[in-house]
Image 1 (cartoon, rainbow, N blue to C red):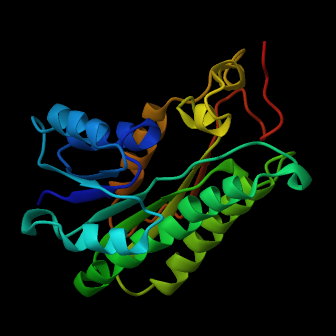
Image 2: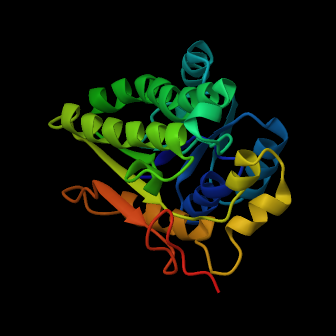
Length: 250
């Protein structure tokens, strides 16, 4: 039977690559994002492989999240796989120099947004006693680095939510796991450095970073394991990376 995956943050990076990988492997898609033009383009690209439905909403708005999930047509209403991918980093300042608006954005999207979407989707999974949730975390959720403060805190929260979710859903038939990437070359650094492309480009210079396609391949592997197998928590870094602050750059 064809499965349906609900992917947040599907218009770029890991989310987009996961959508493409899933489509190529016959998984129907509900693609979520704030940029309708990108959603439309991705739907047009993937429609030839599978059924695709798009939802344009901001995960920071709990009313919009509920409205979007409730609006799903019958053929997309049963979500088998939830990929909580949407997230971002804003700024890279010391705690004493940090921008409160940046803090709010990271906590609202990375933590509260993940919770809002999960809350909207989990009940149907529990009712069917079936489903698989993958929370996209970060190595920043496993350690703290200089000027990472609130971003690291938000990803540590994702780590804790992932663990709590798995405990609370034990016995319901719903599997829960996390994939925690290290350095992946996406739009992430452009957003973090607020459009400073020179600064963003330097993050990935001198070594071979992970690609979004690498993480998409791993996510697909995780969600296609036999039912009795649950990959609960996976950390993946490029070979050149040993930690958030140790990268072998040439």
